[in-house]
Length: 430
Ligand SMILES: Nc1ncnc2c1ncn2[C@@H]1O[C@H](COP(=O)(O)OP(=O)(O)OP(=O)(O)O)[C@@H](O)[C@H]1O
Ligand SMILES: [Mg+2]
Image (cartoon, rainbow, N blue to C red):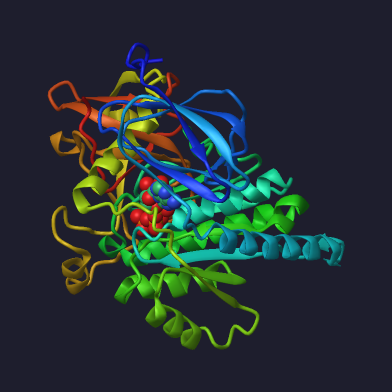
């Protein structure tokens, strides 16, 4: 592991009173080790085992919460830390308990011997209101109780399952490791390719619809996952087109519970008004935790970069990255919609372009540093939108003279498909 030798003799004990939490911002350049000594404590719903060190990478921000009291030990210096007894955890737990009731109800009510669907919870709210954190808690608590809910991540700006620019979902079969994050092995991933939905609203909606369709199909054959339901995480873009996308997601996934985080009266009222015909839809307004960290646009950019870095190198820098070269003729690169490189989609719409048009892209130096998705599409048509992706590569070099592309990949294997999707997502290979 690359962090060896970076720890000093800075071991400290922190005693936590019941229902309090220790909020930590890890240093920007150094990791932090932490372990539970006694009592019981959890990190966003993940119960810590006793006396096992966890190494948190630089910049990670999290809280260790205890229901009944705990002593933890940390090794390393933090950027920022404090303890707080004021948390909204009781209200979050109440929501979890009501979801459990819904899940049990689903298993006992069957139609044509298929259990009815469990709760489909969508979490909405402003940026940095704690949506992804609450999603993680609800999923972890459910998994701890033996359920297998599906996590749906619609946030293309700060994605949780894989790299930014993706719309994805994964079954949660056990509580999610607080360092490693969500497992990727069973994830269903669609590539949008941009970090803001306005670059191509039509495409974003299409991918959300595809994902919902796939999950519906999958859940039919899996009674456990069907009854466990889903937790849908959304973007903090809650006005104008962002609001329209929330309505679209609520309808597309046929959500049964909308959790609004934070004091968002206008949002709650608007959603209630616009969704008044969905009689069975429940609204729950929850307090935002004071521990949620505000992330400015520069920090968000850094997080996006480290998210891509984690995909290739692993969260703890423990993965092997492969540099590979292919001939131009070995791949075909496509883009979806006629998006201009630097301007917004507004100008594209004004020109009347088709946002779902699949266009072949010339291979030249402009692909350097671009993150491309490897599509499972068999034909370069609408399948590029409806198919999931196998993974991502980042272009390191394009040699037009020799007609060769050099890219990096987390896999040593040949590309599983010739079809690559280009967006505007970039990552500078170091
Ligand atoms: N109680 C807490 N104590 C310390 N840090 C916290 C706490 N709750 C959340 N955080 C941290 O605050 C940051 C923002 O939280 P989170 O990602 O859940 O917000 P979000 O609403 O999903 O943001 P976005 O709108 O960007 O998706 C994260 O780094 C998270 O780990
Ligand atoms: Mg989030």
